Length: 125
Image 1 (cartoon, rainbow, N blue to C red):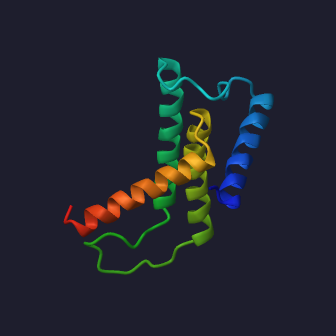
Image 2: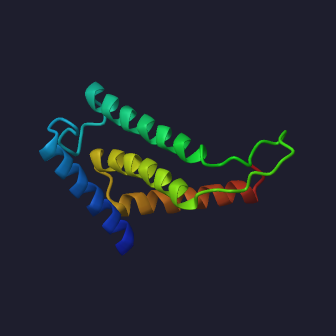
């Protein structure tokens, strides 16, 4: 059972991917890709690394995390931080679209993993 907002996120990402493909052909392969092929795995890996780069940009907005620092730097531009996280999420969402994951697939996998991590916590993982 899909959440309407999750469905909307997937739709927005697919629309963007199709738009950018019209403007810059070759940006994305036709999807769903064959996840077993070398070329597809290279594309997926590239998207994942771009997502990680965006997360590093988000983390760059956090200045108050160093345990050895005696002075506080609590100022954070929350909007810029969130924008970078959204950029990262878009790359990860593109990966899911490329491999043919649906909003229902993601939701089901999320719930399955949530049950697993709660079980681990309960049983002393």
